[in-house]
Amino acid sequence: MASVTESIDVEVPVSTAYNQWTQFESFPKFMGGVDSITQTDDRHNHWKTTVGGVTREFDTEVTEQHPDERVAWKSTDGTTHAGVVTFHRLDERKSRVTVQIDWQPEGLVEKAGAAVGVDDHQVKADLKRFKEFIESRGAEEGAWRGDVEAGS
Image (cartoon, rainbow, N blue to C red; front, side, top):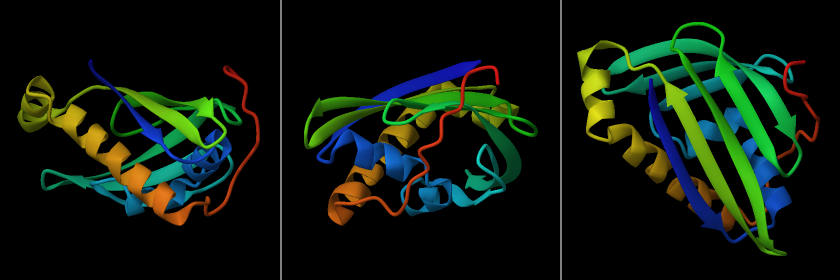
């Protein structure tokens, strides 16, 4: 199992960063390799990605979500992965976003990429684009403030 953890500070209130992160269908605007995400209900999403010339489709489920604190998910088919994004208030106008993802690389190319840190660089670049996206807007595109308890 491979793992990556990256953080970035953003110049928006924690609620703004969190609210934007709950807008899964906007991820292609700042995540490299994400072609589209279709949110099928409050807890389920269908992803289409193209990374290193490999196109994949898979479904995910939100396994825990607490407004302004965290969003956790896991894959339910296809690629084996899970992750959590946490949100930390630094002051009234600044917050820290931390992403942790664990996944099972498939095939030689993915295993080699994980070994040399390609995924770490991708997550870091995605967070930088998220920072630019949310700071340039100054506001979220929407919000889902529902609460999902772990194990529910």
